[in-house]
Amino acid sequence: MAEAPAAAGASTGEPSSATGSDDGADRGHLVVADRVLQRIAVVAAREVDGVAPDDGGSGPLGRLFSSGYPAVEVDQAGSRVRVQVDVAALWPRPAAQVAGGVRDAVARRLGELTGVRVDAVTVTVRDVVRRHPRQQQEARVR
Image (cartoon, one colour):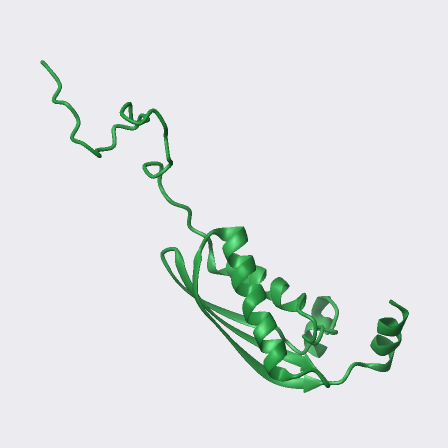
């Protein structure tokens, strides 16, 4: 029995002989978990100058005394994502400058590391805090 030729553009599981290359379009897709996107966004936000560090430490007591910021929520649809980031800013940094830096850093890092299309990053400055005297001394030493 003779096989019918594959239709143009149909996937046969082998690289297309017409082009001689495999562009990866027929191999499937990557799903990045929301939790992974959240962790990347938190790290990116923490690296922005003017974002208050989460000074609670680790463990149960650290979580008790932690500010909880940056906090991230992710809404993902396929390869597109919208992100909500809540941060605490350091006094006397301008809140708009801190929020803009967080927005840019989160969008850039998510795109670089996961390949998702970031449709929107909304940043809310939920608190403004002063550095602790110990943190101010450390900042001067650097």
